[in-house]
Picture 1 (spheres, helix red, strand yellow):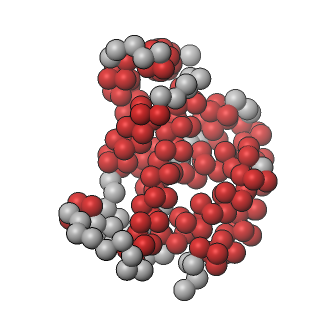
Picture 2: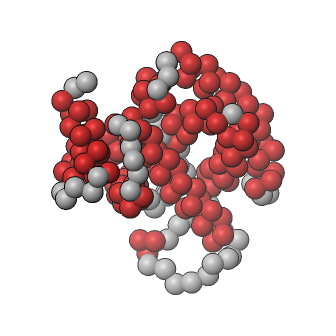
Picture 3: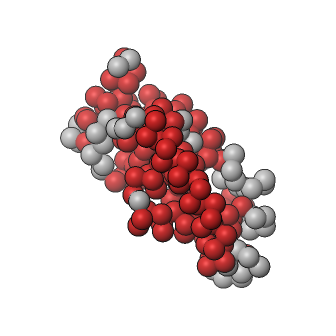
Length: 195
């Protein structure tokens, strides 16, 4: 294990135990990797979206630190970060859908506005709905999708986060993609994306 990884693991353990200053020391060590995850995930967003990778990283980090998670190491932490980013993007897509349909009318600041045009909102919601169904069928396959699609992790990073082999991740990823390809059109119909 390289020194940076062991420092992250040590600080995660200290943060879990509530030691003062651990979370402040952790952010600089994980920030670049979290930004890479955010940039990777944001490439799937529609053009003109208002959320920037930096804002996604900060919101995800705040959620992670507020959750007081017991991360079992660096891989588990980044898996949790990928899940937090996924949830943030899903929440924004749902809010955009409500705004698009005229619901939730209230005054907002320009920084908080969500552009509700474009097919990406419906796509994100359809993938999330299909992922929920996949999770009920095969939790491990769903975990691979969360880490690869929403978290932008490589096969090797996903294997490390899940404590399995890259070969197993490839097998699960291939199966999940095939299942989702057949399920997403029906999910689009169920979530109202086929308008």
